[in-house]
Length: 320
Image (cartoon, rainbow, N blue to C red):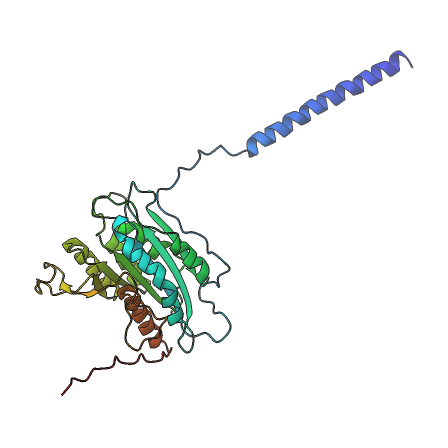
């Protein structure tokens, strides 16, 4: 072989090298064409996002088996700033009693509970939440992890807490499901933040979704709190109630018995030691517990659940 074979081998090698070079060039060109432009990393959203369910929940509109009664979705929205320590402890103590009492009806309601807690900008957090769930143990665990802290100025992030509760919660929007919220606090919403959150706007969205919001104010003699909480309840068809350490009238000095609007606040026992005569020993005892329980039972009763009547308190006969 010699010169001819050597020339032939050389020609083959050269052709292979050219083909290889051309092939690599085509591959790189195709890759360059297919590669999309690198997008800038998205900026973190300042708005809260909905969290995932704790455990396997039924999809909206689905029912669990077992002959359950009416479907009830109940969300608690609670101010957890420093002045709310008593009522938060009250909620921790009473919540399981509330749930057990609601579930004692016949037929037993298909109850889901959720919770949103809010503080204010500059605190450890602005809003935290647990989605609607039937896992009452996990719900209770989350509730017990909340403590009062932060705050500072009087207004709080009420509007942002309502946004999470109304617009980001995993509500069942089925027409046969009752949807209720309890907004509990002692301070009005910030109206000076340019963050897009507005308590009245959220109340209107709640009304459109048929979410009834009951507002519970802790007596603080704050006219703006009263105005806002009444407005939220009125828009959604809920009730407005004031709880305090003793009898009195909102807008007046304690014990004066007078006030411009006549909104009497009800006695509230933060120890949970008070008992209604004739009520079961494990029934909710505080003003908060009884208020919430009565409202949920009334909604369940509208949909067919029957509860054993609470015996009327015995009247003492006056000695002759």
